[in-house]
Length: 162
Image (cartoon, rainbow, N blue to C red; front, side):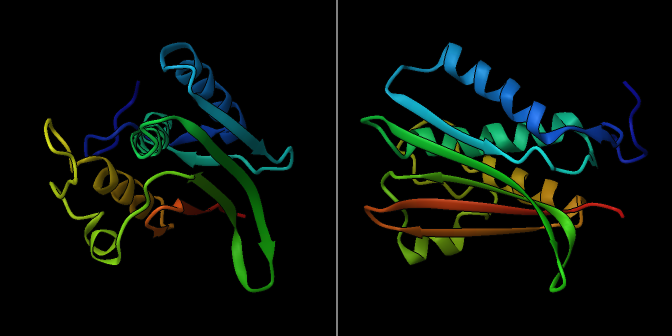
């Protein structure tokens, strides 16, 4: 694998649809059966140039957070669609939703801060900052929406070069 000058894996053309299917297969094989997945990935998604490992790590971190937010199980929804309208640059919107515990406004404001965690034990606070960094390096945007008792929606808007 070639490395970029900053030490990260070099950007390569990535099929996000195929990437999501691989991650889903891994999660289904290794997680408890009380977590279900609903995945919709448009067949017209453009190819995205990024570090494949970086993208997979970002998505997996978001899925782990969603799983942890649903201690009794539930559904994680993953939607990937093409962005191609007059108001926004061409790109991909990747939305991951859970129907779990949700976050208060204070927690939501701090959720992307390095080492901030709501976990009582163990290492935490690195997943969302890593996702945020991946999105920034891709020249994209990260949006978090959450409400206690209603769950969380994380949206990654990733531009593609035309």
